[in-house]
Length: 102
Image (cartoon, rainbow, N blue to C red; front, side, top):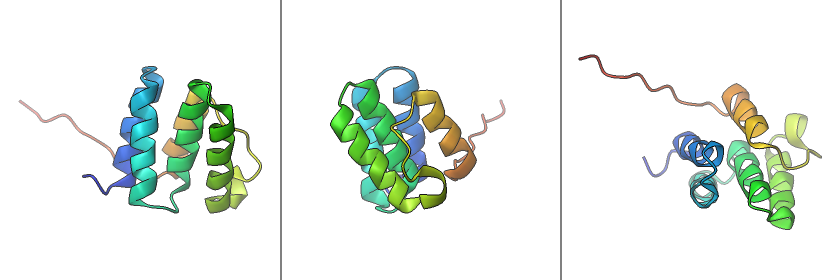
């Protein structure tokens, strides 16, 4: 669904972990557009931008993530991809997909 921030973050992480950084930035930006206060969207975007060498933008996204999850993300530097995934898995309300039988 185009308005599902957790689903869009999941797609962003797939791009990030497969080193498809353009998709990672695009989907994390879409997640932020869907839910402006969703810390995972900003944190994953920070990781994607950092991986793309866009350090100033990555820091800005990380600061935004800290505004929406002060306890865990305030003052945290842009993460490595695996750390963005860990945060999303623990705190981002990820969805679960099951393969259909048959």
